[in-house]
Image (cartoon, rainbow, N blue to C red; front, side, top):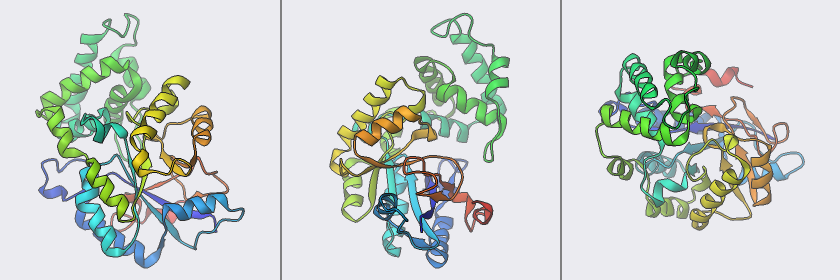
Length: 321
């Protein structure tokens, strides 16, 4: 067999009793139920099994194989996820941006998550408009598109977010110059979250000792870039620099000849694939929604399903091929 359901997780926590109950994550109790369901109805495989299947002509995976992947290096991975996986004797694959545990800096992606979890979306869109007006001409150029043009271009709903939420995400992720979007996201974070970013970062992410513990106990550690950039949007030199920096800080946790990259935001291109293949990467994870086939999709474009596609959240996985 060459097929595997690769499941993507982000936040896993006791949402109802957390400071940010509206963060888009999976409740801890539901996570425990989900792992029990997966153990009963699937065979949970390791990342090493998937790499071996990629190397094999016909695939080597069992029927109903499932792989568990966790993005972004959150402390939830260590405090909530890791004990449950150990209890069930299954492996998780954890993809960690290098910057999170080396610099204790809050990534823009997470500033956005917690702004959205703390703000009324309509007020947030108005504030985003106001800040775009403030910085228009200061690093963006006088001819930068109007707010209305930006909304028309980027406000496209997906299966999890409404168009207003997607608009805010795209503006703060990629639509405007990095320096300006960093300033805007920090201003919004200060207004809606109100905590120092460095302290928030230390509470949000795992540290090196915790990553080391999970690696020692059989978990797989993979790359998720260094700065959590849209790798497919960078020029070749910037892309290579980010991945190279990630390889350097993750050296303790990976095999340089047998590592795996989970593309931040699912963003990649042929230059990214060519570069990582030359550096010993053996698989790449994307955000396309499908059951992964190590032969049909290829090792560097393995699609994933969301944890919300499986019980007890839903049975969407039954309709995904």
